[in-house]
Image (cartoon, rainbow, N blue to C red; front, side, top):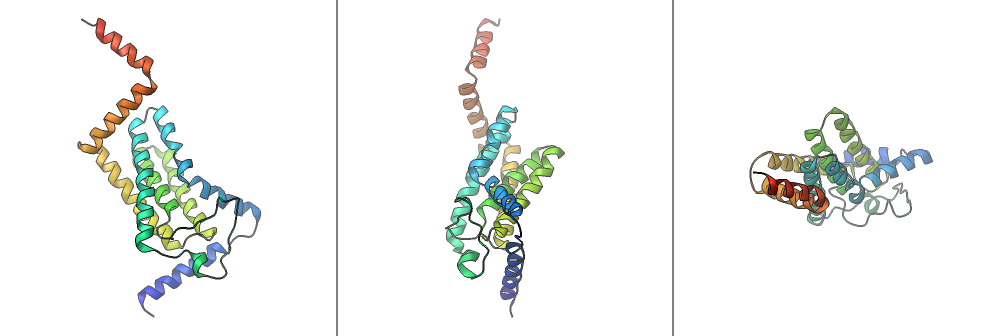
Length: 212
């Protein structure tokens, strides 16, 4: 047996352990809930939350991360074209919940894990400890939920997590140094702020016009 076969056997063994761990409705609901949290349109709520809490640069960075995560995930899925577990194994425990646990594209990497770990890693880099703890725990649970629901191999989740963390590291680094990214970010933030705070901008212009 070569290394590739051994790794596949480990991957399948872990998958079966988690996928067949479901024993009650409460656990099923919990895992469906974490999978829903990992969807783009749910994670996107973090952007306005950061913006209105005066963390506008972080809001911009998270928006970029979510967009980049989804694009990168889809590109890599096409490149690797890996079948999902339920396309390969006959006894996958599929939990169907009103369309929330349906998947039809390729398996690697897990898009849920990629975007969740990207956002989570960024918040770990840029936030205090109260934010850091859920920013670690929630992405891990999202990744586990994808295996539990029979939608991804463990290596899909690990691969997505690693890529997401690397992507977050890149965006955080770009935002900390002068360059095209940070300049563009400031321009976008200024434009958005003027649009959503016209009264504040009007006061500034009046103050400027009467200053000596």
